[in-house]
Image (cartoon, rainbow, N blue to C red):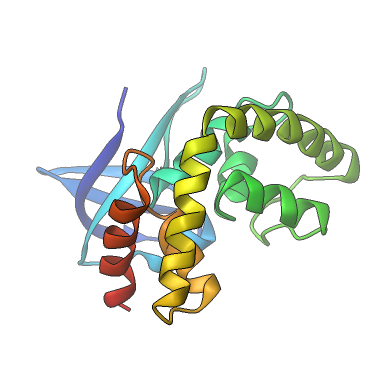
Length: 188
């Protein structure tokens, strides 16, 4: 229903932020990582997911399209609700989430994730990542080429990876991905 909402952050607490757009304050649940990057009084663009339940309509928010896409995959894992999916999606790409979960690294704001549930997530993610990889073979090639180019320009590997992973999936081609990543890296 909604893809994203842009506006001014007017309030936030430990679980959610209020984003005002044209006189309407949208209460959006966000991960601790996302909330840490939102500044009251500043403009923000938040990708959102509308969760419809018997008791409420809740918005869950993400700063990048990659994080939102990861959330969409995680939220479809049986036994995982939107709060756990949001916390795990804050890790980053699907590959990074799987890698961190295999090492036992779970974000501090993710509650209720026991060993059995963790194993179930890892099992389902392995299959989904393989499906995604098959569909995006060319995109991963472009991503690798773009990463190599940024490293050869002198950027640290981790910073280059983070900049590339925050780019929308619609940006195709190594050259274009490098251009957009340089804009992000130049702003740091």
